[in-house]
Image 1 (cartoon, one colour):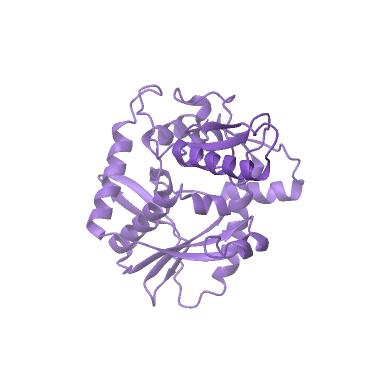
Image 2 (cartoon, helix red, strand yellow):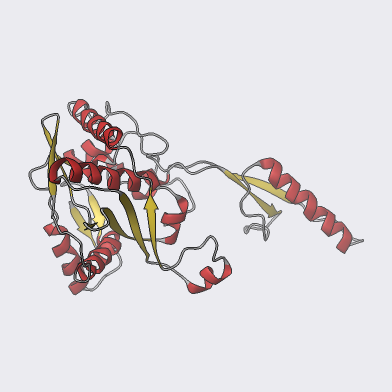
Length: 308
């Protein structure tokens, strides 16, 4: 992998981040649980083009902060077991996983995530979180004979704002939030892990272009929505920035026009338009490491509202 430093991050920070990244290892496992969250196309393109992938050092800041936080938390986790990386064989293929925390008293397995508020509220990674924690639980039960009765993620939000929280405390999260996830049936979770390994192995011999296209969910395909503008303006009308359907946007315009008629008896009424913001594969456009090697990747010139 090649690294860039587009934002001129100071060298001591760059070295600290690079040192952390160099320590990561999945051991002699062929796949990690984190890798298996991805579809076969991403798994194999990453393996084949690992030396050609280019990432900016800024992309690692969140995970670096998260690792620092967890290292400090470990010092104060009474009753927690530190096991390191654990290995399991699935159909003769070695898989590894390394959860952040395991409370032996509560039989509670958890992970820590440094992320943005949008990443949490969008739900783009909910499926990954559930898969990761529940498959860690499979490994702990099968290999270490540890009971797991509870799985969770503790989020630390890198862009948390008190002002936003005070405006909408029912929907905006607190600065640190622990979310308990659904605990999957052990046998079903194990079957899913076996299926993921089988798929990865099955497509290993396929060429880049033959690898199956990622699903809409894997692409983080955004839902289409509609915006209302006053003709001639580049900014959406207040309150008219996001509607799930054209009918909702049309009703909003009808209400606006009624208010305009009540306010102004003379002069031409404002003209409004509706713009459709189409579905876009946000992961493909902005967050996929292997987009440069993927035949399905959309052009970089495609415009999309970016929310990290």
